[in-house]
Amino acid sequence: MTGFELFPPPSLWQNWLGFWRFEDMNVLWVLMGSILLGMSASVIGGFAFLRKRALIGDALAHAALPGVMMAFLLFQTRDPLVIFIGALCSSFIGFFLIDWLPKNTKIKADAALAITLSFFFAIGLMLLSFIQGLEVNNKSGLDKILFGQAAAMTEGDIKLLAYVTLFVLSTVILFFQKFRLIAFNQSYARTIGIAVNRYELLLALLIVMSVVVGLQLVGVVLMAAVLLTPMAAARFWSNQLAHILVIASLLGGLSALISTQISYMAPAMPTGPWMVVSLSLLFIISLLFAPKKGLLKQYADYKRLRQKVAEENILRTLYKLVERNHFSHAPLTLADIQSFRSMPSNCLQSTLKQLNKKGLVHTSSLGFTLTKKGLDNATQLTRRHRLWENYLNEQADLSPEQVHQQAERIEHILTAEQEAQLQQELSNSQQDPHGNQIPSHHPQTNRHPKREGGEKF
Image 1: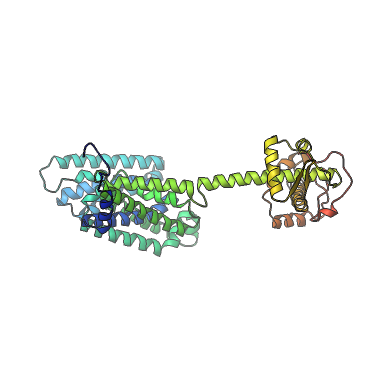
Image 2: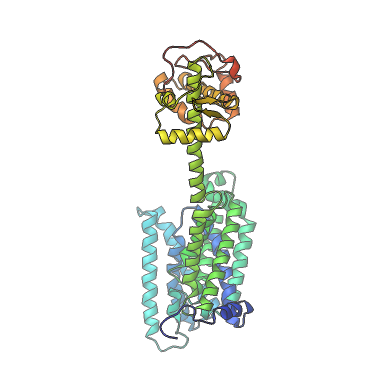
């Protein structure tokens, strides 16, 4: 093999099979650790995301570095539990400073976070450099905590990850209702007697534990992405918090699976960074293709709405022309329509073609006429438009010149229930502010003599 190859042939298929057979037990440890971290960090990171403390995980990860180094200096061991406790203490001090500074000084929250992050990280790097100059055992690999080294994970690391994950997930499930209320409406939570400070401290503990336990796998620098990206992606798939957290945990677990397999098949590729890359790709997929909030769905909805508005505007224009002609069946030309509603000819023809396909407009060589179905729809639209104009004129005290544009927008989203409510409030209204008759629900009862002037289009 010459040069650098991510997937050296012909072993691609063999590597893939080897991964799923777990021929190397270290692969199983890494996979289990990655999945556990991905799931627990995604869930607890969701609450940091909701409370608009998105960068708290990044700050706490950097704040953990001095604790790791101090624990090693004091006990001269890299035992997972010792390192975990040291990092936990250091991160908690960092969390306290981030919370205390804005409350007791003129320093703002973002500045407090930046100061704490930079200070603790600098202290950690100084201690790391100091340790590297000492002649002590087990110091090799301490610097890997900056970027993570999943391959160095041991059975002890996995057990610690499992315990932390179990504690985090069970605590979130147990106190989910209180955590949710605090995240969305802290003031209301206080008024109903919830000990907000106590649960905030518990949330802080869970966040700190999730951050600290993931340093070996992902590292100080990238830990924030594991906390936040799954939640950001999951929000495109649902509106229910419980569903969002479940989806976030699944995305976290999926990214762990993808990154571990890539790292196994291409040993030069580290698991931690690939986990973040996988999460970012899953975020992009969610951003584009989520069925409820994805950009493609939003674009399709926007196109449908534009088409709906254009069709309804033309229907109402046709109604106005038919009304002006005493509800005769005489065909209307493009010029007739454009005299009331300015629209490019190609757009107008396209819209009329769609209305024809839907059976709302009949097209002939002489022009266009409303079908019975089309007249019913046009009558309903005109009725809603003129009722809303009356409502604005009477209730909002707007002039007839002001109400038209407002009604142009609202007529497309008024429901039958809202129309009935308007009719009830405006029970005596027979004409709109421009003097046009408000049509009834039955088009055949709307024939009336031609009026001069009338509504603008």
